[in-house]
Length: 400
Image 1 (cartoon, rainbow, N blue to C red):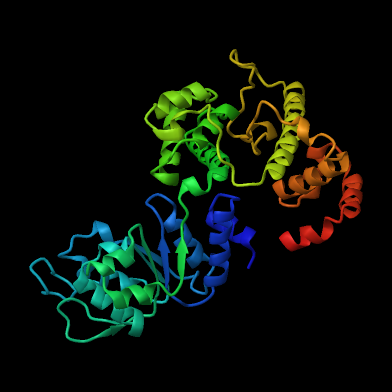
Image 2: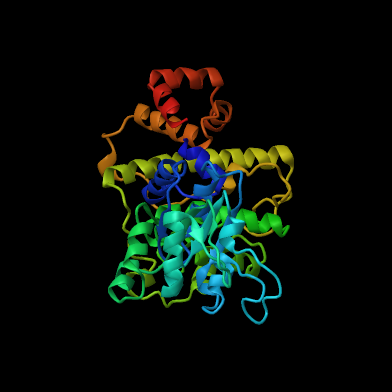
């Protein structure tokens, strides 16, 4: 099962090692009919992982029923999960199916399972082990065939020690565990997330979008984002509304975030720890500059050829929202003041740069060679020759 296909289908955004590990786990576990426990802080996207597991399972043609256990009052949670018979309690005027019966043949996602009462946990364990449950007020067991995916932002092992969560249910659930990483552990994905959220929001609301300045993105990478991806999404949407479609600057971000980060995160002038070796970082900076130059050239070409009206601020073109494709220059990129350090001169050749530029451009365009050749400013024939020259064909097939 292709990780790229899973990512596109599920909408999970990110190229960080942390997200790639999640996608690899989904690829391995999704086809197997086994219960899965998804752990992680609130707002990290646990529900998206659950959807990805269901979409790529043998039950994908059946329903995925999502239950927020923390939002159901303790007095009625068993009725909601397992259903009830007519007359089981005062307001039970008819028989009612529960979520487990509704999800038969499909998947049930129990979000915030750590919030379920101990009495209910006994019945959940029975369903997991035998597929049997008893509706409230009934005298006969019913059977259901469901795959259970559970999620929690709590430490279930600690709850077990405090006798607040059943040990047998905990061990039954944790057979396969997928950890949804906090945003602070995947800072390199912020640019991609910001772009996705901004484009989705502005298009659905028919708003002008001029993008985020590189300095603004860098500042956002120093923020703690305790609310994780959910907080970032809300921030992007709110700042676009408040700034009325203007290109987002670092000052706008500072104003919106405030100065209450605390610690080193409160000072945008301080360096940011990057999860890569110094040599890789320098190559990244060199290549990024090359891409930025290419984007600027393409940007100017489009202004000249399409006659786009130019706004009075910053000389930026007014991009129509119904455009079929995103202009390359609108893809959010980082910028830095010094792209090539003196110490790196003499260690890299133009062939090194060209090879990596071609490889990364092919990856960016999902191995679409026509689009890659156009972006790189070379003919398709030349690109094919370069791919063969640098031995990239095998790498493309492995990633495909």
